[in-house]
Length: 635
Picture (tube, rainbow, N blue to C red):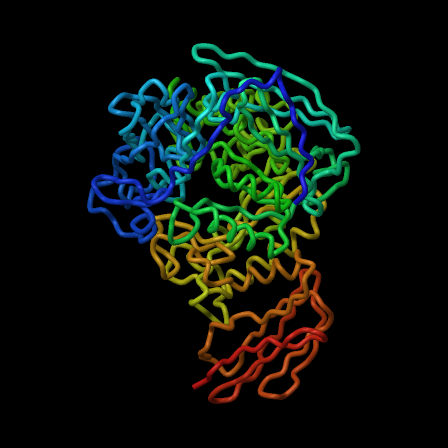
């Protein structure tokens, strides 16, 4: 990808060494006496196996799921590079969960509270000429003063994102404040860019602002993710590169607009649990995830339910994925000054660290507040007041982006009125007996808003559990059986309603990938939320993955469902497929059954297809596409 580089030289260049950045990730770490590789978490396995620890659940004062995985204080150590004389040294952590104290040569260099934003400590005054060491005390213990307090995902502990060693001249572009990179850009699509540069010198800091012009810029979009680079240098020789893009985002009365054109966002939710590594994902594992998101044709991703790694935002810039970036205010809050200030700090750091990314279209304020609140505390109103303060913080830090939120409480008018735009979470047919049409109507009436989004919808699905025919009524979502056919049916029903509703500005599938939720005991595999389109190990694309690929991707798609169901218990079968290219023909054991045109959501379906005893071969074919086979044995 080509970049236009603008050199911004603030004053005359002087003969100082420039900035160097060294990756401190890798195998040179010890955690509690054992060699580990950073990024690292101690919950990659036990946080996703559903096994209890044998300890009683903590008494948190609310009805939350007991911890069933290790939550502890751990100590990481490693050697540090020798400092170059006359320069300043910093250590940047992209993410540590979730209370952190950094000691260098035994002295406290800095602390941080919060699992999802970066922070940097200055090491200069604690360093010797050689033989330096760093200890990082980390804990993921429950803390009444730190969000999130409860969540339907495993709160893994560890130094789970990369660590950098930064060396700069004595006067440098500030790498410490808010965990940001020291340069904030305000971008106008007429080509004007205002750079605010924070300059740090020992014991003091200053801010400089300068205007720059990029003639006739191309606009960033999912179809054309054009990026530019500003090279910001100061007189000491220190410099940083900042990537950005030109684009406009706005919500109007009839929907969401990017660069002045209306579009309905086709989105997915993603947790940072990147598979068997848990939260400790490498850049390659993150790139794999986002290639899969692009493969289905999505143009948006909700980073649920917290800011994710710096590399994730970079990927979304490069791939053209619009990002919903969320404050980790989930389920319930603590009515204390310490909690309120920490929540505002996490919101502030999220914005300062990621506001230069063109992919971010909105900041999100909360998810499912009141989910775990006892009835006697449900009417006090202090949570709304606290969230209104956090919203004000977000808008002060970034007046150009609106604030959204995800609610599952249609009657909470005061709560739902706080964000600029609202989206709701709904699981019709899975957690309740309603339909998506009924849920949509209820939410529009309750909210009084002309447009809304759907922040979450979907159903559980184990690709190795199958039922045909599906039983009447609703399956128990907490039960041991989550047949893949139920997940397909509910997604098809939901999506058919969604495409016919013009008042939706965007929808986000829950979820792109199965993820660790250790308190769950369901679906034939404990410790996993299995609502993903892809399994947690990324080895299996479920049938619903291909439903959205057929609807969203420009690539030709023909897929036959239930291929992993190899045994028939009945004399007839239901055959479902997805295709975005022309009529589809079903052939069974060489006999043509019929041809259907895909419906409005690219589905073809045959009921009561007769099977013979023994092995049956079911084949879907469409002109110009490879046939899809399903083998089914009837005994």
